Length: 286
Image 1: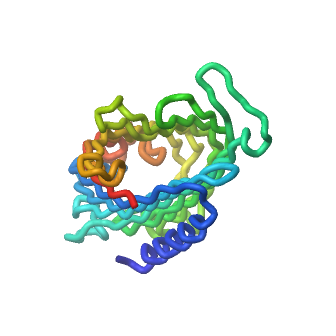
Image 2: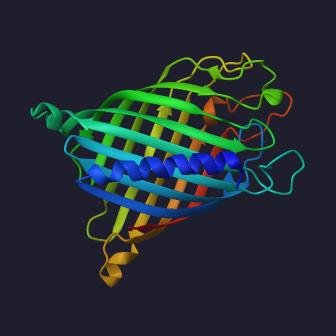
């Protein structure tokens, strides 16, 4: 693992350990997923990736925390450097904190299918070493969230995104060490809904992200659609440990990945701006 990835993982684990003691409840899991149809803009759309993740969700008196770190390992169709036989490595970290308005204000907020609302803030950070862009993304998010009254959970948020990146300057050739995009909105939903008493659950997220203006090369970015959903089976329930071990099938549809238009043309253009990726997934909950 490269030094930048090691540093990112160390910071992620430190943040997780600091968040846990104040929790009234928590769920921490490790997971693995794999697939052969991952894609990268201006590259291939049949990349094999193995992804390990650490996820932590917790609740306290006034709200909830969500934390996830993915460690993504590509094959050589997404090379670590030009001509490499080894694949790129990436760490992607997501943190969200949601204040529950009813808990903070002491005033119920319910109408129709809505059982409450809150305010969500957080960040995304990534680092990737590859043959091209070498992303060093930083993104802050802020906006309101609605809680929908369903079995399990469903939340819908409208978030403002402030995103910047610092790609390898020799590749970007912009003379700018960090480029900041136009602040733009994202409509996002996250859910985990049990399917009756079958032991199955429908889980995932969907992000609909508006264009973030011009990119660092002066080109127009495109609106993104990123839907990642899975059907998981609670294997742990078979031996008396409900919710401890789950396996399932996952599918991701990601159009205009990172704002790169699927219709892009020119030198180096490829099919990778839209990914349609089936995966196998397993996770163990502590």
